[in-house]
Image (cartoon, rainbow, N blue to C red; front, top):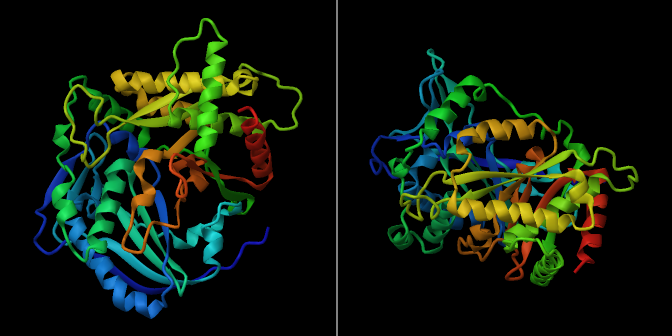
Length: 464
């Protein structure tokens, strides 16, 4: 599969900051929810929009409003313009905003096939990397304190076709819900020509002191970070040669999901000792994809040796309404429980593999609703241990984030992609753009595996 050529030339590089003197110097202490994400590679998200205008129209008529609305939005979402400060060991990292902090903003022009980029069929993973900005390098002071920028942006124009808004940001600054709150707020301010009503109506809550820590979780997690986290690099998902990987989007329609749920419930009725299941759209989708992924790894293998080998599945649960202390729904930061479940290979590859996966994932989701912080003291250690097995599948994104509601005034995105799954090996989930109740699943797999996954997907759909 030849890689199409995308010629990208930089038009402008600038910095976008909150309006002068609009934000005081502010230190944000990291909560115990933030600390695990110090290990996380930067998040990379692309939004593609149809915009059949020439480049000079974009730069003259649209770009000034885009940048001005970003400046106004950063006044409320200032942590994204700030820096992560990591002092030497035993000193706690924190986020610090100072007057003059800003977000790098690149404008580029691309020549290439825009429609190919927004397609679902398999494409070379390298195609999207042209449109992802680079974070500025960390600054290291004489006392070995690292100062790390938290976000950068790139807007790429495809003349007379569309544009791509690319964002890279550090997860320690914001979880998915917080980040998409920012994106939708920026889009609304841009769409309305600078109207700040949406920011007044739904402002981010930036005070991380709201996070109570009666069980000393922060200290436990910090000690793990100090002991090995600041130097540890998870190489299990790294693929040095992107030429061997392709990415594709698979769509589970609403009918598929409802059929899957009914099939699972039927399996439950056939098992007299089976406990009631939690079968949400998220649970059913994750179980289905997990089994398809494992089946694709063993396609054509007749000897399933070591059926007791454990495979792991990790996801996060939003805890804003699941804690014993109140957290505003617009809290800006991280408020995620890390959830990991395990099944033996023989269970996943068996005839009822999807049912078994639904059971363990659903039970974990149900547990998180009442015991969100159970096991939180070992989140970092558990993640490290499971990552090193090479059998961990993780999830990026969520159908509840409303990715396709991000309208800057040019309509809904034609496509949104999570680019960092190319490296991490995660699956990405989003609501379906074209059908309410459907789910888009993004995958990046080696070329030789994508056909096996497609076969497993199509075969599994025949169950219901």
